[in-house]
Image (cartoon, rainbow over all chains, first blue to last red; front, side):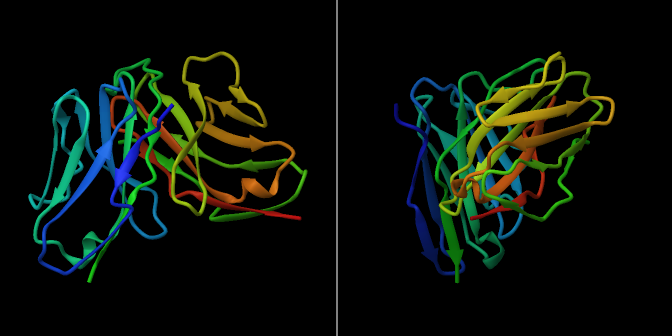
Length: 119
Length: 112
């Protein structure tokens, strides 16, 4: 079956511009996650959606970052007034259950990522 | 706070040999899950194996096994019979009552 898809695969933008990154989760997965991976680093959690609501936005680095999810499916991560330090690979993941609850065996499946370069 | 430590930035292994990638963790959550992901040069994160903190047996998935030592808070990944296609970054991750936390990864290079 189809996995998580993300678009665009690469995005080059100028400092100060807004960008939108899209994620299509695995069909039927209620939970969706955004992560950021800077060069040579591990993944940094940004935001988690359960359905259309975002119970955990604790990882968003600033108010320039926002995300929404509509219809319990597609999600868009928006970065306003991009800065050079926003350059990274943005990864999206989905899972069937979601949440951080104890005993959860929920596994996250990742998309191929969007490489964002801010000049 | 949750923390994952991967102390090996890079590892080399001969093709067909076994290799162990180290992972230690720190958490105060009574129940948690441990994951290993593979990230080839293409960039996609590929789920490999999962271990629950209350699982009695070590997890295995084909050539991958997880050496889980709860008292030592370690969750090492063992890859048996390494293949050239195993060359990639490997990330250990943990989830308790928090979002998934990742280590900084280990770059594995398989030599023919």
